[in-house]
Amino acid sequence: MKTVYFVRHGQSEGNISREFQAPTSPLTDTGKAQAKRIAERVAKLPFQTLIVSPLTRTKETADEIITATGKEPEYCELFKERVKPTAINGKSPDDPKALRLYNLWDKSLYTPSIRAEDGENFDDIIARADKALEFLKNRKESEILVVTHGYFLRTMIARVLFWKFLTPEAFRNFQARASMENSGLSALKYETIREGDVWRLWIYNDHAHLG
Figure 1 (cartoon, helix red, strand yellow):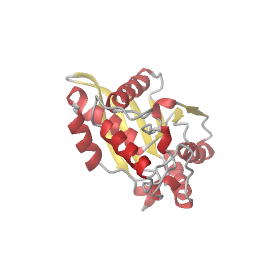
Figure 2 (figure 1 turned 180 degrees about the vertical axis):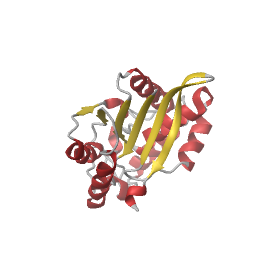
Figure 3 (figure 1 turned 90 degrees about the vertical axis):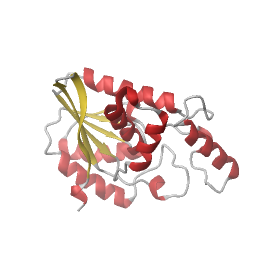
Figure 4 (figure 1 turned 60 degrees about the horizontal axis):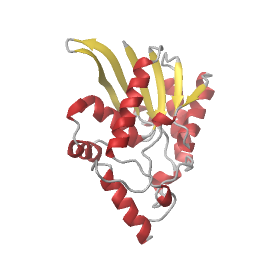
């Protein structure tokens, strides 16, 4: 049996800005406080390895966990957020060209045949979720903590819940209806059940530490 805990990063400047969030978006003061609270909480968990998305907001969140636990981080591109077209990073929705490209990219996340410049589409992000789950399954550690992002974490969870039945429409509906708090804690278990060895959702978006 394996348990993987997932922490969404603290609130970032891009989360509260009208601009299309860039990879370099840092935490807000609120996000830094959230990171400290989740760090205090996960310090009580018996995880052996800390895996972190290399984007600024996840690295800053992980810094608090590193301080609280003394764990050395392992940065991994598999757990970064969905990849926007580079041309819209930091742009405003008031920019008509940027907005058109964003809308095309958003459609591509639920339409396998569409691609918006160098942004990820449905096929890309589902394939990356599969690689991430396989990567975690094959790790030797029994308890792992991953600091990642809301949309990509929901993608992995949707893949676990729907498995091969995850259609573009089901994916779109799941992403639209499943919310996730900054610094929320989720967990998957990989274990043996009657159907075989499977990933199962154990905890979703627990943010009691913010109460």
